[in-house]
Amino acid sequence: METLNNTELRKLKSKVDEARRKKYNDDCGKRLDKIASTKIMTAVIGALDTFEKTFGWLWGHESDESLTQTQKDMLELWQKARTDILDNGHTQLRGLQAEIANHVVHWNKYTMTLPVRPMEKKTDE
Image (cartoon, rainbow, N blue to C red):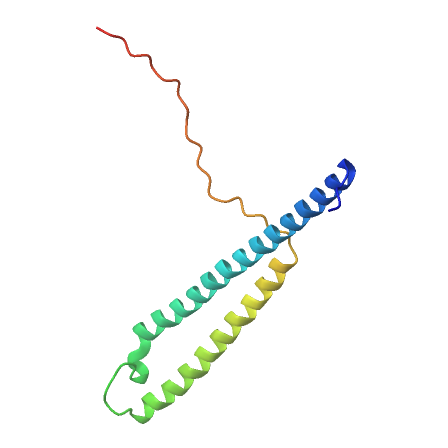
């Protein structure tokens, strides 16, 4: 078994620390990417849902009845608008992901500092 001298041990520890730091930064970037992606798509999908709930009656949204020609025309317009909105959301998401990839991200984890008070001495009465 080969033994390492002090200098070699320090170099090895430095390499291990650097690899650990790189992995941590990569994980932080992936975490931010996932959270940001979820939030952007939730906002886009939520906006579409609100629009459908508010104006869906125009194209017979959630209606069991057959659609009139006007409703069919409105449904076609809505589907085009919905597709354009989703495409734009995905384009913006890809831009954000590319921007995140260009930065070093460091997550400052959730921390809580608890105050430490000296213990009070009990007095016997």
